[in-house]
Amino acid sequence: MRLALRYRIILGVLLIILVGFVAQVGVAKSQSSHTSQSQTVSSVLFENVQIFNGKSEGLSAPSNVLVVGNKIQKISTTSIPALPNATLTRINGGGRVLMPGLIDTHVHLFMETTPIEKVLSPNTPIEALFQQAQTNVTEMLLRGFTSVRDLAGPTFELKQAIDRGDVVGPRIWPSGAMISQTSGHGDYRSLDELPRTPTSPLSRAEIYGVTAIADGEAEVLRRAREQLMRGASQIKVAAGGGVTSSYGPLDANQFTESELRAAVQAATDWNTYVTAHAITSSAMQSAIRAGIKCIEHGQLMDEETAKLMAEKGIWLSIQPFLDDEDAIPFPEGSVSREKQLKVVQGTDNAYKLAKKYNIKTAWSTDTLFDAKLATRQGAILAKMVRWYTPAQVLKMATSTNAELLALSGPRNPYPGKLGVVEEGALADLLLVNGNPLDNIRLVENSSQNFVIIMKDGKLYKNLLK
Image (tube, rainbow, N blue to C red; front, side, top):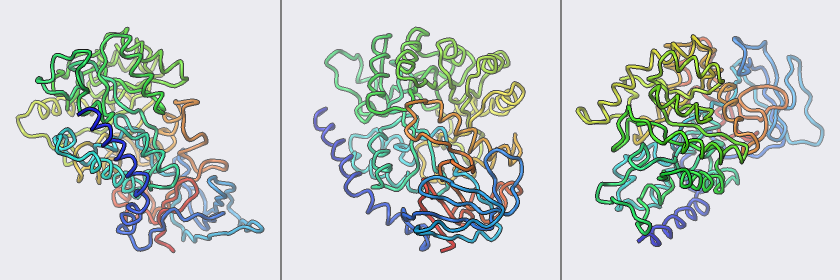
């Protein structure tokens, strides 16, 4: 059975490679008859645009921006002459706003639109899950998200297919499988699968590469090294309970500090870092003491933990979890729903503490298991004005998030400057029909308001054509 599933996984990967591009052309065309799929041009000249550069509080004067290859070569308030002997695409911005592509630092491309019961069901063909992941990445790029950090899931081959140009999607910083202890946040086994013995088959989530169950320093070290071998740009561990956890209580710490340090050692040896799922102060502090550099979530942190994060320069990758239309729809009365309500009660305080102590704060969504919720990515960004100004929100989702991506150091799969509109930066750009600094809700409707989407110097959408 285990061997058969492996063959099905290989088949799923081959499907991505062989039919991905054809499938995604159809998906992208359905978005707009004006969408241009990976149009390769020597240079693109944006004329008469106002620039939000990813860092400033305001817009530039009317400017021109020349993209050559995959980088921004020149920005000027005066005309920029065409390069000799080069194919040039001119885009008259008409005073619209040119800004960096958006970045989401916590996604699950393999699981974001498929209900968990279907993901884990042996009746669901693995090929269908991989095909859905393909669709997910194309739709995410067409929402204006040009870079994402995937924090649990088999996205290595998908990333490679995107980088080759076989599939349309954002840049991906993959973690591979999230490393979890037995009974931890990543343990999706049923009780019938216990106890595990040296000859027990892997669970479905482990075979797919969604999670990797490890107990003891040696196992944690091995599982972390396996993800690095597969191409992980960073390692993710589960240091505490979670809302979707089948068994681990929300308040429970997971992994001993020595086990967490084993993951940190593996990542440090490869000149990258570990990020930890941790919601409570206790789990966060345990992770920080072990040398972990980034916390995912943190909604239930207290003031002592906030001070510790600020003192040690720890990143906080937090999501604006509220009990609203963007909450994952868990059944009323379920254990997950009860835990969800506890988490959302801490969200306002967590952002208050992050601002008070000037913690390095990244923005992300962490949407799961719901196709409608995935389409709300821009709306989830817009709701950040509950705590920040529109300029601060857009800075967080561009240049600040790019700083977190760069924490991978030599394991960064896309060396270069991202999240900014500057000379020499990689050309991931959006042309917005309106001023998002005045009206942040423009990012909610990407199909209408993002008239140009460029990634790596290529036009993937052009409504002005």
